Length: 175
Image (cartoon, rainbow, N blue to C red; front, side, top):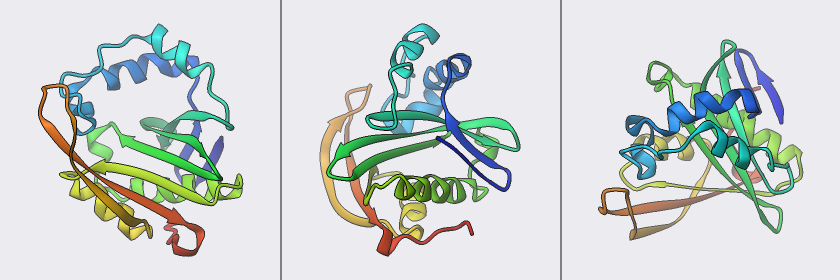
């Protein structure tokens, strides 16, 4: 994928991104919301072994750039039946809460609908109300809450909120 809107670019992750991804994924402050407050403990080689098998038909790890600098990651995974599950992390704290995520998600979602997907799925931690607010602004509909459905890296029970979005409900923040 390669999608651009104003100063936002979404592109496929490459081998040259693995060092940055390892730094983000090993940073507990970046990964805490995903249940890994001590980071993933991975390395560039393991990341590349996984990324190099990505295809648009299966899954794809993406780099989110703002003003030509990587600030985070996105991903999508084909779940079948024209549905796709997405994820986003703005990893550079100084770029969070600036409206970039809303536009970046709009760009990703539009691109996925253009690829033929008809339903976008995602989930987030029940405690991540900031993300829930953004998803709902984009038109995502809450489909369920899974209470105490998984344990984080520290063994604490966590809950998740499930969302889905169709073209009919999509509210884009880009032209």
